[in-house]
Image (cartoon, rainbow, N blue to C red; front, side):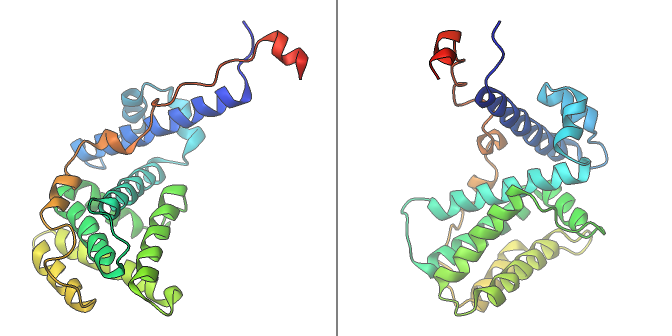
Length: 229
């Protein structure tokens, strides 16, 4: 049997990482952080236990990356929902609705995420977190900010604060109240944004956020082709 090409190996690694992210998100959503184990994640993903450590330094990093994936893909869905628009105010409203919708529909995952980022390690710097940051920064810019470097961290902090307030054990604030406050802060019409659609988007199948094999593997190169190179 001919050895696998570099492109095939790269695609297999990508799929393995996707399966681990999806498994981590599903198990944490079902069982919570403490009852989710790396062994359980590997079993759900159909992967060897050692692969978890190969891609991630530990459970907290893996789950943060998985929740950041959930957040940025939910945000993407909301921003690109029909009718599509480039209007900065509408896109800001959709961004607020997308993130607050997750607090309402995925409270276990979002509470796990908030608890994780308050640890000493803070934010996990990963592609998922970077994509989320890019999308929120783009919303600020399209909204018309003259200083995105100042206004993007403020939007991020306000969203984090609203999510925390919605999930505070024993004293949660209603999501609709938090939404109204943020819409007022940014001068947005309460009729804009995703509205009830944010609940449907947030509550959908988690698997749609992961690509564990939708694309065919690159065809292996045969010996004749290799000799022609």
